[in-house]
Image (cartoon, rainbow, N blue to C red; front, top):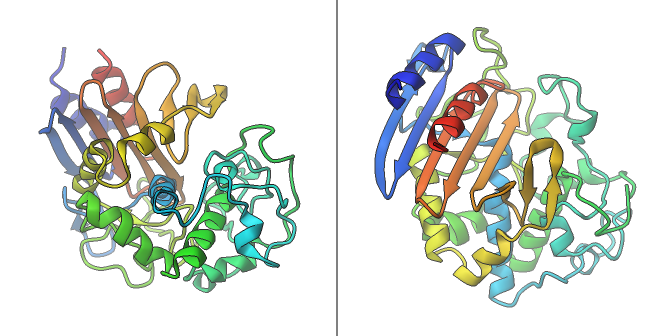
Length: 334
């Protein structure tokens, strides 16, 4: 069998992969490689330390920030969204709870309904992206979406639900959501390079998202200028490895709460997976996953607690990560 590094090199070459790959086993780095360009206009290469957007991978960090507030008594899984939102977003059912939102079982209407999206590289934001920089500004896109089904009835992936969670966390704590995530998740996890960067002022270490493998168009007009609870933070493969280690060591929230977060709440047969609170779960094993896909972003990080194996693939192109994640899933499962 071809060595893993050679197999990844071959797949990256065939698919024009732009991004970074890292594999850890039992705390040791087995593979860490970067490919392609972080900035095509200036021909700046990606490195293993490049910061990449992780799209919906952010939902795991949002869930951890919310659960940390539950753990300190500020919130509860049974806390209703209405008790915090007051008169805002009146179309959200009064019975929707924190647990419903975390598990994608709230039934609230979604401002970015992925089931209704034909092409993720379309211009999907209902307002100008520069108007979405703070958590409270997202109220403009969350309004006007009626209830889709009664709370708790079923699983339907909902981006808007995680922005509502960010609003709840910010209002409950009195700390801006971006800062709350830094204090309660990134600092205890040892993730210094994970942050909510503005897409119109990216620092030199951050990769610019490109819509296609070989084109020059970027995603700057496709996504909110600064992300929120449903996605949009930037991170590195080293930080994501640290996240998994800290999570299962109980350094972010207690191990009892980690067990609660990775307890399956729903089955998603279309994706052959299950869902807990903020984390995707393998259909038949204890493997835990974070995943995200946006215009100019594709990301998956997978952790197997039983073998202490982690593999992370991040690309600054739309759908660019999936061939290599598929390769790693197959090779590391054997």
